[in-house]
Length: 268
Image 1: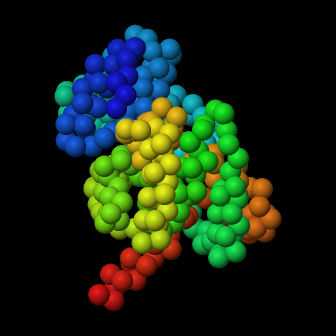
Image 2: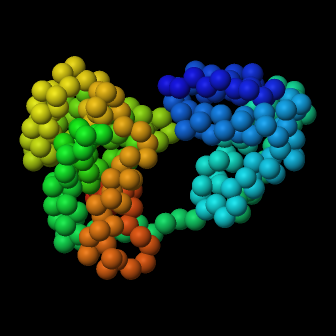
């Protein structure tokens, strides 16, 4: 986990708030990064303030003109939580109201057709070597198959450690899940075979690596890389240009799996 250095007069409260969240078992990584950027804004524009003011909150809310409501919600929520934490400590603090933003936009998932999946997998299976990322040609075909077959979120797959993936039983232990709720999923035999072949290649390149899907340093890729890979290959496909409605996303790979689970739960 990244330990940020805070520069504003709110820094002590922010640090203690993050420590409290992590002590309760939450990873609080993306929210900590948001609070770090909030701290930078406060240090620059409100250097003498030791509490959150309404002007400060308004400046943070409007710091990204034209931002999607979902992005604004992600940025506002940790600052709102920080305000509630400081209020509980007795600070005279402005808490960003819960109606900001007015509403979260719900996406209609794109359900990939068989032809679209075949075209995308064929494209990533022929990923050319890269001198800047020598492992990606091996990681990419496997991680996208795992997203689709196991219903993982991209962050869950990206953060898997080697010991989280049992190549003999097919058991995947998802530790860093949404809401910090761990769960277990199982791979099909076909996916197990793919993962064993992949792991053998990676061990020859990076013996003793920590991450299952590792970069050249043996650690996890950064959070934006899977989306970048997806668009690098998907956007060039004729099948992608034929899609109508909401554009396809990486997150949509997990919907067929989730729908199967929901259907089973209703009939069990």
